Image (cartoon, rainbow, N blue to C red; front, side):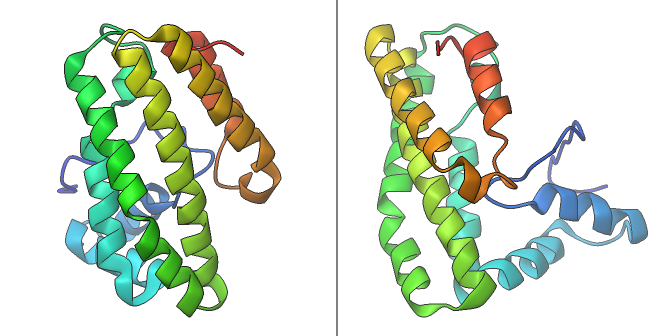
Length: 182
C-alpha cells in the first residue's frame, strides 16, 4: 500500500491517543493510491487543528524510542539501548507538556478534547517510560513500584478514556509478558 512501513494486525479495539491506523485502513480500501503524507495531514489537521504537525512529529519520535517487542517480552529484559530509548521517550513526553497546555487553553470543542486526550497520553507515556526504563536497567523492584503508578493512573482514568485505551489489554500484556505484577 506504500504506507511507510505501516503494519497492522487488525486487532485494534481501541486507539490511543488516536485512531489513525483504522482511518488509514478505511481510506485505503477505496483509493489505494493515496499517499501516507496526504492521509497524515488530512487526519491530524482535523483532529488537532493548526498545530497538528507538532503532534505528528512528537508521536513519530515517541514511536522511534519505544518497543512493542520489549513490552511483549521479546528480547532480554535488561538492555542499555532500550533503557536509553525509554529515557528519551520520558523526556520527549515531559517536554511536550507546554505545547499541550497551550493548545488546550486556546482551542474549543472536539479539538480541545483531542488535546486533553493527548495530555492524558503524555502522562501515561511518562509513567510507563519510567517503569520500562527501570526494568531495562535491571532495577526490577523500582520498576514494579513505577508499574503500580501506571496501574493507578490508567485505572483512575479508565471511565474517561475507555473508548480509546484498552486498559484490560495493557494490564494483561504487562503481567503476562512485560514482567510486571498486579
